[in-house]
Image (cartoon, rainbow, N blue to C red; front, side, top):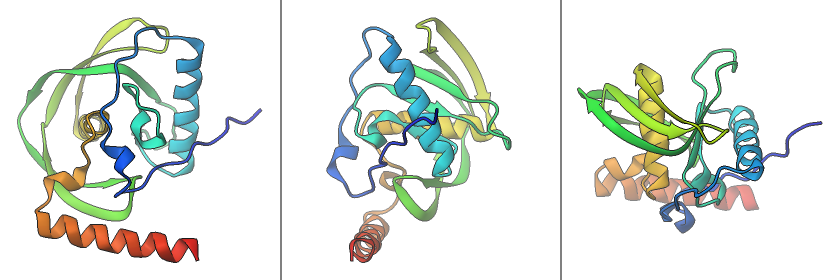
Length: 170
């Protein structure tokens, strides 16, 4: 049985600006949503996805930075405990398809979250995984990587995406 794919919202959709609510109880429905999000992320293809991006405004993100898609991570109610250092990287986003820009992030992080069984865990991450987690956590607060860009660059990107979306609908 295949997992149904979800629709990924695209910038400048205002729903991407919604602040996600804390998940009070980890249920089978939350675990099923995480599975759907992973399937959607792999299909896109991407390395991370936040529930906000699929129009579910709950604090849930999934990531898998492995080459073979064999290391899925689920973070429910993720919270950044510590961020160390600063690194500039090229980022893209499934909600901003086809565009990549330089963004500064913490080089290493310590994050705390619940897993799919509702158990608390902490994870130290660096490199691509740390960047991915920070990027997806931003989505939960209604923030996109384009918010790190200058207003002029963001407006140019917005116009290009709206034009692309209009062409796709025709």
